[in-house]
Image (cartoon, rainbow, N blue to C red; front, side):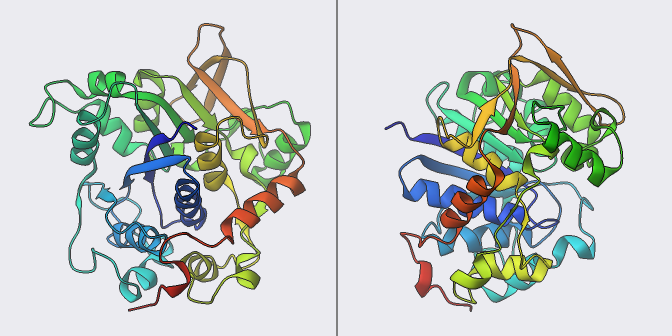
Length: 327
């Protein structure tokens, strides 16, 4: 069984599905499907790194490398801290009094130490860290430029980004009803937060890329957490503080599952093509048999995918798990 080497980039804070995605990544690592090399936080929220560390510790991985965005004032309003602040200040973690290294340094350090084409990157937030990595210069970790280092060490990038007119008419209509516009006119949140970064990554990232779009994640998962796990479970607490005790849309956990679980029956891929984002953040998809990109859509009934994801989210971790307690 092939075990993937994964770096996750997340904006954990504005939405609680990032917490579920990090839990899913840890649970899939428990099953031997991946090794988590590092987790990078892509906002300026001072509680993001602590939140990441809390989840990793809950699943028995207190030593995973963590980094954060070095810029100021990016996604730091109160709505971005409605669960992060409480959990990062009430659960044990390394970052209650400090912040970790900056993201680009972590990426370059980890990538330089890996075998060629041995790392997969998963992005479930704005693309500022990934864009900065591409633009980075040679340093003490590697004499390669950022784009050359990614080209040498990374085999694939999977992102929760964009909006696509997929083969499911129901999924497209659901997205269009929610946003009250045609799917071609939508600027998806992760793209809209930093359009120049998204455009840079879409145009210049030098490996195959897969996108799980806005329309693909509009199914509710996580509702079973309230009924099936202890009240101190940090994923459950995050969902409750976010106001999503009955479940939340599933963009990020589905993106992680697709990226890690090879051949997962929940998903199918589009034909090959190219993805670009225009100056307003709208997705521009073009079929191209020589393209490096594809988008992902659900291949099974919503109910089946929801049941499987909720079963995974409420399964017992192989690490600290139920013995984990607040500090």
